[in-house]
Image (cartoon, rainbow, N blue to C red):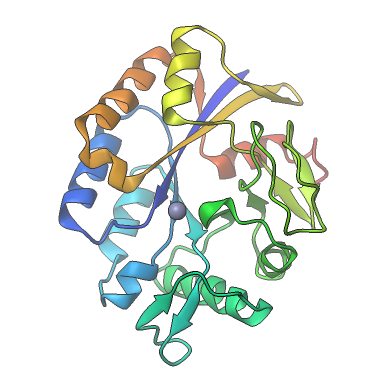
Length: 245
Ligand SMILES: [Zn+2]
């Protein structure tokens, strides 16, 4: 069974033009999207994403979590800004993850899945996710290395589904542009796990204000019309027994 899992790294859903383009794109899509939401900017600006998150879930998409890690400013739980480019402690990492998680959970959308901002892979991230009810992670990629900062995984490509720190690692297989190229050439990446072969590609919410990216999504909807459509969470449930869950 061939399955496609389109995913979105969503950081600006509180901005009207981004949400409008995202909603319109998803409303036209046959596929089931996994929306990895980083609510940091919304939190800083005091925006309430409840109606956005509810709309996504009501339309069959999965609300998962995305987090860019920075040194946060303001009292814990009342972040007012952040400083980029700082060396981060495990406490900084836990605060970024914990505050985002709390924001989503308080709105009734407790996430099971995660992808790390800037593809940052750290032991502290995996350990925090495993200790806070997460089931899967999609930060590793089939097409490039993990980065040099973790001991739990080597700095290599991740060609298949595996378990890391108790989480199911479901690697990302392509950016959307590459996915279009592969579909046109009829060469999907198709990671095999059990009786399923999946493609998990991504774009950003703010990309969708460009007509080219909206066109790419629509084209993929057509090219992938015969593939099964699952969120990443649904895929993990489908293959759970193969990966020991
Ligand atoms: Zn991001």
